[in-house]
Length: 285
Image 1 (cartoon, rainbow, N blue to C red):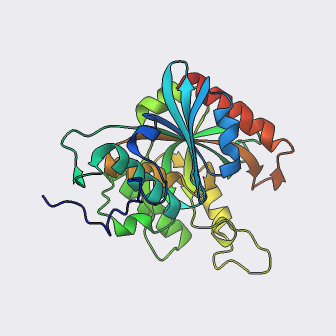
Image 2 (cartoon, rainbow, N blue to C red):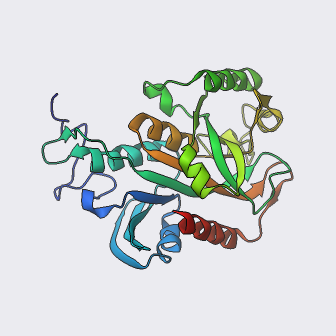
């Protein structure tokens, strides 16, 4: 086995990974993620102590102590392209010897919990509720660049969604960590989340440009296949679940529902809803 090249895994002069600007001792084995960099302090304010802080681009990291456990919170920005960078570099911190550039023989498993916001696709998934994503359906193309294998159930759902929507590509379908679902999200709505590659046309919003698939929202709301219906959509969860599956980490995405797209309503208390979700997750890690 050859060392990983300098252009495949770029390191900064201090030995930190290129985008996250982190070294192995800068992170805990449990990591909370948020999209918005300004939301990182909303998580770390609950830590007993904050021992490390880093900011580079949209990636902001706070690492500290919570009830005797080393925990990190990292912002990822928006989109599965950022999630690929985040997971690849995070995995390198624990599973690659950055000095020799060789993968470690013994692999470390991280627990990564996304705490974000989402829009509901169903009237009975109300504003200000919390959805834990059991399955994630990727309408982005990230996994078309990896050797990603779906199981039989996931393949059936992917093909059914493609037929229903008329999209020119096959979505990918992946699942959450069962243990994190049980420990973190046992009292949340168990949902199936659609991950889109954008906020406007991919989520059926019209401002000045008209979406190519104007009935996509209606189709996703009415979809029901193999006992599975779609509850919400956002821009990262399928990237989390698929990258975690490929790299061998545990991950869970939980979302505060701040918009109901069917009822066309938006919450009037987004900050309060998110803060309550953050507190709930931190109590259970």
